[in-house]
Image (cartoon, rainbow, N blue to C red; front, side, top):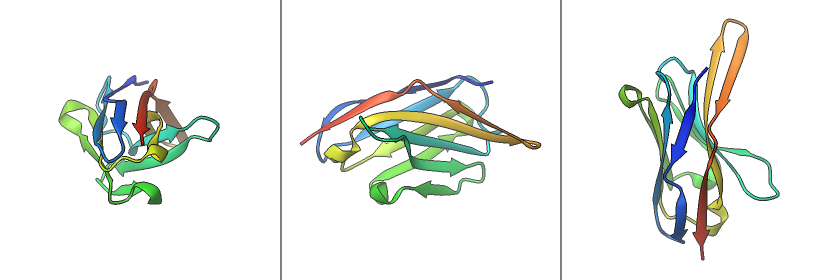
Length: 119
């Protein structure tokens, strides 16, 4: 079990930047993947970015070149640096931790942080 706490959301104008942080209650080095998802009103939750335990990163096409995910295992923290924000980035952003142990998969979620981008 792990608790994930996100912070860093807020209201920003288009073109601005925000950095989201996700602090875990225990070591994140044991998780296969740490990621950020988002959910806009009336839409399904979607993957924004993820980083593997081997530091391989993956981004959804709409944020490539603008967002950067990183992890600091010593601080049990995952970051999402968001630059050149657009109104369509407005959503609740959720931190996610994913682990495979044996034949079982475990997925944990934070409570979410609101990001609002005004035009």
